[in-house]
Image (cartoon, rainbow, N blue to C red; front, side, top):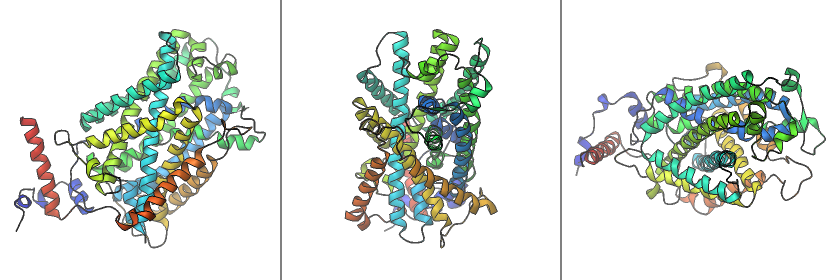
Length: 522
């Protein structure tokens, strides 16, 4: 008997190009597609957030190489990240789905596509959760510093954890209102970041009577790590920039909500990196020029946030608080966008049955057409990852390490599969042409280097409190995904699940639209 709903959907000839492409990839248009190309760029640009990553790790940079490594390291890492992003962008044009990286791996693998998809997806998912945790915990550190300066409330571990939890809750609530609000706030955020950098750097250039010399900014080398090898310190000092340049896969995860996704998504990935490279360089140079007092006084600041102490030393306490507010608003936007991208990854991975309780997490709110339950998955698990930092800052360091290493392993896996013999890849409308091979292999080599590099010790002597727990974090992810795969998942996970025929896909969309109309009516 024919399902009566199958005749209710739109006729194929009336479907827009985005929906047709999504159907060809095997999925129904369940999410609301209303995001512009600028909004797609803005989400990734907001998650990279130079006013979050670059400032929260500025103190690390001051100790690990100092101004010269922060400035030149930013340029070098930014260029290498652009290469990695170009390789991802080319694939995103061919496969514009919310699953992003794990879907690409399944399609590009010559054999064992399900296994490649499984491991890519879990690294991407856990990296996404860790990034959300790192961003919002960083905001909590800045906000408690602000409270300490303005109200006298001490920045205790309990205060930081409470602010962290409230921030995640707020981001969950904002995302529940739908993609239109997320897109609007991301647009605001993009301009806030650009104008915020202009204001911060402008104030630091114009107000102080004295500035550091150009020689100090571009050539000063500082080694407070305990290691004697300057070359080694330069290498591990690159973490400041590389940690900041994460999260631009958000453009891919928002594919099913972006108009003209095959062109706008790859542009969003690449442009978010390039704009962050330029604006971040301006920010780092501007802040470093403002270091006029004792270098070590900023590192030992009672606020716990070296950039804030630099600002207060340069333009006074009130001025420093003003610049801190600009940075905090940007960081809040950053966390909101991270939850949005994270939830789409959970939604897509659940749609394909890879997450325990997938039928529960793969749920679309009929009124907002957003994955509401996946949003709260992202919020709750990010909070859990941040809780150990109540007792140990080393635990928080492990979270940021797995965010960087885990995400880049997921970022480069599809590019690697794209380059291996036997890969079946049909380029989308946005592609690299003859440059594809060179760009792909350079990106692969770079990620292999940083995967090893950022698991090495960062401080000497190595003790329980200074040990780099990143290798353990990577092993835990591999062990979890590997054991789960061999014990259970390999028996049932076959990679991305196709949702049905053309008529069945249209029927799914029609039911969602009908439910949405009923919600609005009542």
